[in-house]
Amino acid sequence: MLHKYSLNGYYIVLDVYSGAVHVTDDLGYRLVDFTSENMTERTPSEAYDALNDYSRADIDEAYAEWYEAFERGQLHAADDYEQFAGRMINASLKSMCLNISHDCNLACEYCFASKGGFGGERCLMSEEVARKAIDFLIDKSVGRRNLEVDFFGGEPLLNFEVVKKTVAYARSREKEADKNFRFTITTNGLLLDDDKIDFINREMHNCVLSIDGRPEVNDRLRKDWGGKGCHDRILPPFQKLVAQRGDKDYYARATYTRYNFDFTNDILYLYGKGFDQLSEEPVVSDPKLDFSIQEEDLPRIFEEYERLAKTLIEMKKAGEKINFFHFMIDLSQGPCAIRRLRGCSCGNEYVAVTPRGDIFPCHQFVGHDEWKMGSVLDGSYDVEMKKKFACTTVYHKAKCRDCWARFYCSGGCNAGNFEKNGNILEPYSLYCEMEKKRLECAIMMQAALADED
Amino acid sequence: MKKHVKTLNKANLKESAVKGGCGECQASCQSACKTSCTVANQKCEK
Image 1 (tube, each protein chain N blue to C red):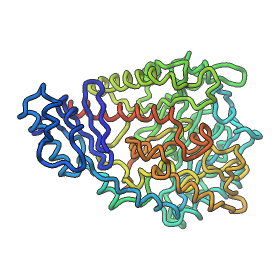
Image 2: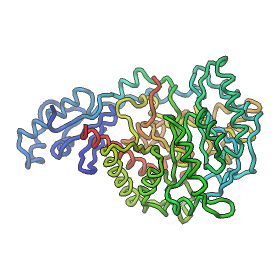
Image 3: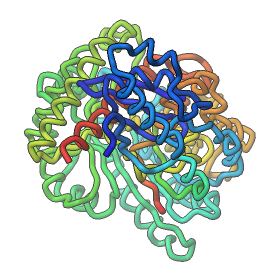
Image 4: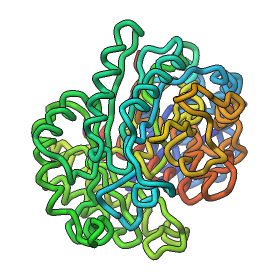
């Protein structure tokens, strides 16, 4: 299967099953339509007729180059990955989202988690529940060494003492259990002080800093319970955290909505404020709300992703160190094909735990009791539901089977699929389209920057 | 030097499948409410 597209003056052909990315010219771009999995060295005669604005010698020369790629296994490679689709059914756990706080000191209008409460009571996780969650993760991660724990909410800093104690407890068990914990945290920044910054920079493998960019964009939707925007209160502590973070990973993470389709300006604003690791996500919200993204907005969003990609190319060529999370793609050393068949592996290798100790396939399923998988308090765990989630690979999703992007997006978000289509196996087309556009931009950027080399 | 077709990467997904599947790599939340990772931007732990 091939996917070809032209963007920013580049003609790109992706060979889906080998992962090869070819940059070609007008002739090669048109000629590739005459190649197939049964191709031979001989140029098909129809190609001469269709491309009669080129000489036969040029056509033969270009065809020979496509044939070489075919011989190398980088053009029309066969799909033999379905054999791996069932491989993770018995997988053990490796990642946990700890909803350490079902409460928040902000009331962002677009919050997917009902402003912190996840549709239920507002509460914080106790140290006891957090310890049991760590024990559960260790018990269920047989055969794995690297484990991930993400402190999430609500706002995790509202329960920071328990965050600290949980980290200490997990570290105390690392040696005897032969595990390596990697902690991450997402915060809105309101409660950040020097002690918390020190702790986060010391213990957190990655941290996600929520800020939407320009003050007027941030403050329109990221407000406190009194309705006041938070930009001026969160920017200085975030800048301090990043200045002291060294080489450790972090992301300044923005959300864009219908109100700021010019989100390139927010990325540039944040870069100007000292953040060079940046992420900008489409809002996840009820389509009926004013700021929610609609199908009809896609052309405008595509245009903006292209503008962002071109802007970043120019910046990188000028030596600026800016990294946009959604345009990161490693064409040579990325994850293996087996990994690419499944995305987050929620409900199978990844679960979320609520302050009451309930287990859900991920944080987005929290609040939907029909998806409760068990409890870390009594060790219950619904293995049938685990199996169901193990079978959510791109080969289990009919729409993904025909999609060129499936080894990059890996089937999308199961919770999003359920929310939009009532079925974890049915991808949400709006997000698919955005994802595909981001991938095309990311690959084009690689072509543009390779050009530079 | 190729004139019409420049291939950007040498890696082949098929080869990665032969040695892959150790499961030690980072999880990648696909939801936009969190990080909406593309799996392709993750690192291999090997």
